Amino acid sequence: MSIQIRAIEPKDNPVIAELIRVIFREYKIDKPGTVYTDPTTDALYELFEKDGSTYWLAEEDGVILGGCGIYPTDGLPDGCVELVKFYVSAVARGKGVGKLLMQKSIESAQHFGYNEVYLESFPELNTAIGMYEKAGFKNLTGPLGNSGHFACNVWMLLVL
Image 1 (cartoon, rainbow, N blue to C red):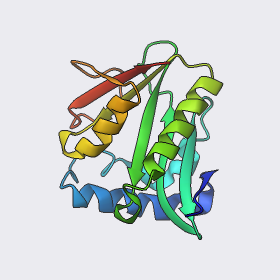
Image 2: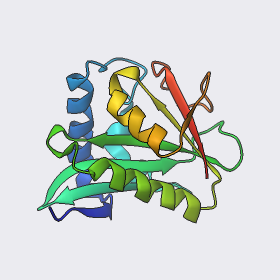
Image 3: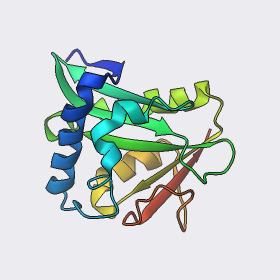
């Protein structure tokens, strides 16, 4: 496997948006208050032009396998950034693609000078949650910031 991790480009928008929505349907979490209905999902390149943010894609032989980024979500404490839009296609799971994407995003958070990484998820994504726990994320009792993703009910924080 020769997986490349690279920054998102404008041409990637429709491909990664469809990959995200396929995964949401797969896990039956395609509902309001999630990335599934968030209009920014169709314009991730533009979203991640914001200072202090970045979005990484995993690609193999020209096929996008997944993506993950960091974003300074409104309302987060100073020095905290959100790990966002972290999805890996079914064919690429279990091959270390997610771990590569998450590590690259955490390195980016450190590069930008953040000292905490926050995330929101769902219990249905238990494999991802296990990966977050292995990386040192701890469960929180409620959400931080104003992501607008009110349907999420798992909140975690990593202190860098």
